[in-house]
Image (cartoon, rainbow, N blue to C red; front, side):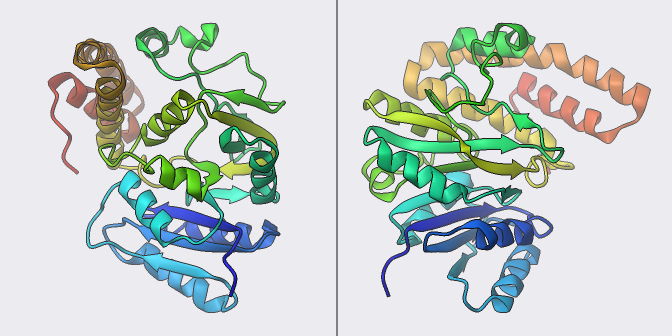
Length: 310
């Protein structure tokens, strides 16, 4: 049997309710030969059971399911899935996404037409069908400061808020929820840096691609729906994820800009936490929504430098 053209790599975590629509959308839309590799980091078997039930009902589907003995993190799971993949192209896809068209074909064609392109990403839409601004410039201290204070919503230096997301263009970075690259390029660059447990692993990879002279393409002909927040950012895990995102960002700055700027960033993170914690606690007291309490706990953890317990 010949190797597939596309290998979808899907890393799951408590995704039992989302994984079936994701897998079904791949089957519905993908015209090239493909396989699916699922790596499940969940603490229980519910997600893996859902994957296996779906695969049993689709005997023609080339699907490989892997469950490590523990939660190995997103970066390691992506690398594990990629090592098991045989396709010419790797399509990293979050479990809370659904293809809206033949996105794999469009993104592979983008890379085929542009030899310098090392990664390509689709237009991302939310549950209501609105386009999500997923392209960003690579972070630096100024961009992070603008983002933390909310000024970047007006300025657009980091989140590219004035970029319409309607036309294809080369960008600094694309979102890791849906991105395609040649398997050979992924292997040549060493894959995801496993020092990033979750968050900023795709930013780091895009930066390495760009520093090597490669291009990152936003390709809106490809369309993907992303129902974000269904897994690792829901419920009591949210506080830990707020902390982990900022810790991953600090690691990114230490790697690419050195210890001094990483310390400056850590101070900015703590200042952000001091500003947001009382506001979120006040909102929790006024509205009684547990999400505000969880967010406050996450930002307070950033202030004191202690990862929240689950």
